[in-house]
Length: 90
Ligand code: HEM
Image (cartoon, rainbow, N blue to C red; front, side, top):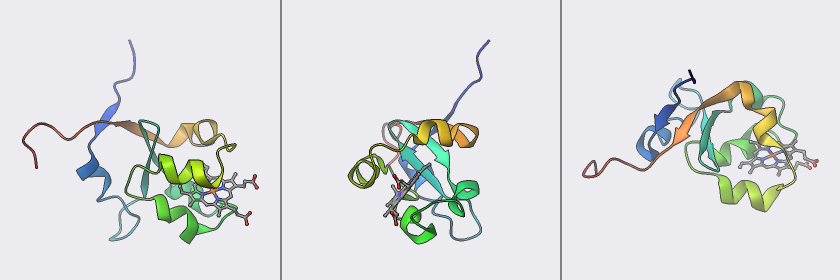
């Protein structure tokens, strides 16, 4: 059997900015990662990394360094899948 992925909606994601005592999550190409354990190792520094926190950062990431293999680097930090907000939830 396969591991069930947590389904993360945009409204769940936007609460995970790394502030208010919560971890920072980032959406990248349909997956959501907890970037908090990685932050101190980011070559571009923590504030730069956190520009993509709490949101789908696919476009921003691609503008900065499309050659970086985040999927391998963050495989242990996978939170779940980024899904659409349920119908009528907003
Ligand atoms: C380097 C920004 C997310 C991995 C950098 C640099 C910037 C940057 C400005 C250049 C630092 C320098 O050369 O002085 C960002 C922004 C992100 C983001 C705005 C938000 C979307 C990530 C993520 C990862 C990552 C999620 C990996 C899990 C790296 C690596 C480098 C780097 C490996 C060095 C790349 C190289 O020199 O070829 N980042 N980053 N970054 N970042 Fe990010």
